[in-house]
Length: 272
Image (cartoon, rainbow, N blue to C red; front, side):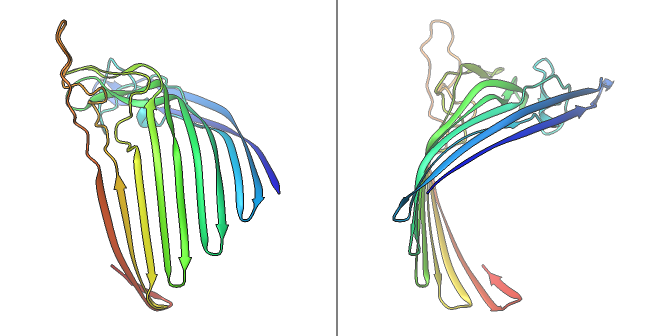
């Protein structure tokens, strides 16, 4: 009842740029990236519909042409156009560990897992002035860790789904995120903007008849840190001044979707 899976994937990519700016054609650039990514997984059938599992895996992502074409802090770009130069960027390497359990029996499923992913040399767009100008750069490490819970229940004409995700997404090294009108310094443990800590989802489907289905989905999301306010400061304090703090988070929200579908025949479906 124990299953062991091992794998290795060799990735090789070549990314080339030839940019033409207001100064004319720029020197051709070409970068090669190679990475061997191993993975190891184990699953154990514990009985009574319970499976325990654990996984270790590595993956990589090479810089895109857009990221390489806007990677010079001395020549910031205005995205999505205006590429200037293409210095070298390192590839992003992610290492993930996950463990959890699954249970399945008589139309009901339940799963729970804990995970942690560390991205080394993550690629971020760093602002270097007003008007959205900036450049892509490698950032030491970022970390995503948390827990996933999900459940599904099918009873007759009803299907219910519940899920919850806790995400702790932070910068894992110190570094500068923004310069220009103000400087935003990320410390180890600073939250990454745009990612909620808590996400709860619920769904219900009712098969009124073989041809008619009604459904609803609800999503609740906690607050989001906004870019440029990761450190919580309103502005850079002058020497000797007390820092002025500002709460510029996007507050949590709820979203409800209602839907219906009708299948009058094998070839047609109407939905709203």
